Amino acid sequence: MLPLVQLKGVTHAYLGDREAMLAIEDLHLTVDKGEFVSLVGPSGCGKTTLLSIISGLLQPSRGEVYVGGHPVSEPSAEIGYMLQQDYLLPWRTILNNALLGLELTGSLNDETRRHTLSLLKELGLEGKEEAFPSELSGGMRQRVALVRTLATGPKLLLLDEPFSALDYQIKLQLEDLVAETLLRRGTTAILVTHDLAEAIAVSSRVILLQPNPGRVRRIFTVPEAIRSAPPLYARDLPGFAELFHTVWKEMEIAGREE
Ligand code: ADP
Ligand code: MG
Image 1 (cartoon, helix red, strand yellow):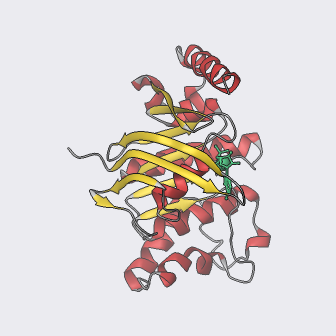
Image 2: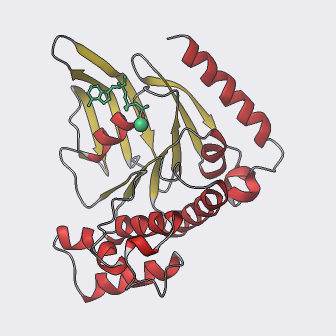
């Protein structure tokens, strides 16, 4: 089966006034359909740059990006992108925020509206449809942002540190809910996180990047027992701590070799 995401020799340089800064160099990666992978690595190793490239927001200097077998050249409804900040519009109700993506892509109709309402329910936001963002907690707002992203039915979901601004307890609950929701829908996802425990708890593979320039250093496969356990419990399973230390040590070395 063709992988859903294929990156071939992706290189990206940011051009400054006097010099170019090589953020990513010759990066190769594939992600299968239905897979949930995490991207980890020291700050500045190109994680956000890579997601922006996969989303079509940023054109790489060199290399090829395919999603679903097609070259990516611009953002599309097939690829959902969720950031740390929820970017909810304060003057719109929760439902109207959740419908925004559908409105913008011209695909709002009775059916997609019903689907969005059921997503709100699935993510525990029933009864909040007419509330405004300011009336909701940070965790709830992130769930609305997730509904808005899922409402357009993306084949691929890109998540850039979506939980990092939340309190620990809420973060764990949300990891659980998101992992479960994506698994149920069979949505392929790439999660960027600086939290190794989170990466190991929710994904099937942890992709470690190294900086200067950003490239894949090592890929760790998470044992089935850990990946299939709810993120909240995965942390207590045998093998979790060992894997955590292995990835952590490798990341330390990667960061020091700069
Ligand atoms: P990460 O998300 O892993 O922290 P980024 O992708 O944000 O890394 O950044 C990778 C490298 O590219 C860093 O050295 C960063 O300073 C640089 N960079 C990121 N965005 C820009 C930009 N818009 N212009 C110039 N350099 C940038
Ligand atoms: Mg980043």
